[in-house]
Image (cartoon, rainbow, N blue to C red; front, side):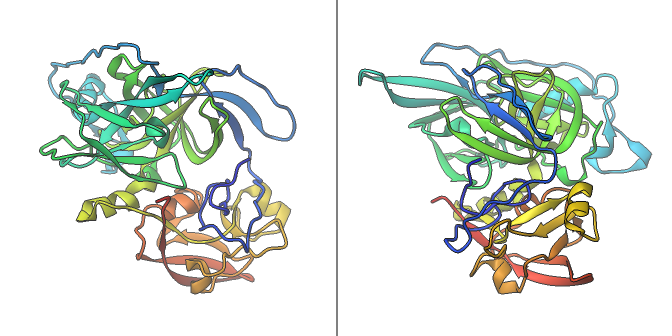
Length: 418
């Protein structure tokens, strides 16, 4: 499994900056779903251990320069009320009622865009040709910042954004990518008064919760809407883009809402109309199995962009960490059954020299159970919880060291591919 940036977290997601002093990789004790995000390879099955091999299809549709059209859906219905479980106000406690899916889809679709990319390619005999691909994005600010998947825009020499009403923007720039996740931010130059999506809190999602997925299905059917539930959380998948490039995606939301090619970068939405995930991958060897990146993990980068400097870096801690599950707790004789265990399977330390974790005094075999007041594991992986903050932010970690609970303040730093 490929390691990015030199350091991996409890599910092989990077949480530390590259360091020659710590090149080892950690093993995962939880059941990891190994998948292939490929448009052309046939499904493959592996045996052994508790790993399940699946074939995953990239959701950005390769068009190969062919023409395509868009169908724009319109809904004319009376607004339906949102109902919350137990009188709560968290959007993740809301349920759809009769007619509300149409209402939510109509509202959110105004913030969903089609992304068309153009790429220069070279053929087998050296000939040059243009190829195109289509994906989906989410408007996250009124002045034109768009959130999408990194694999949607990788290698593109031109990016075009098409709004729900058909308005087309060709002056589009890739302004930031997340080196630790399949996330990218675009900026439409000189845009204003766009309809920005409301972002929810993916830390409070529940298995069985009702959701809808919206996206540019097959590159032809703009803002197609499908419904389902959250089937699982904390999923780890290894995805391929069809050209032998693989990437490990961790802490993913699993849903049975139909996700099709072209849907990459589109929103997974709760019954309150809040975006809780970024649709990223779908299985080609199993029915009704799609995966989305939790929205909270991108909020740290987004807040930097909206600060006005137009640049963003991913916050990092600087540790090797093993996800604690009941099985891992038993194997390593740990006092808790969830959290992040700072552990390296090699002879190297789990703390990267010179990293924020090192400067804060974290040590090998520390167990991190909370980031500020948020529980690691139940609300998300350590890497994703850190991703909600900006470089320069100070977080308070709840740590168990040699059986004693303590708190450690860490000032986060930035990790950027640029």
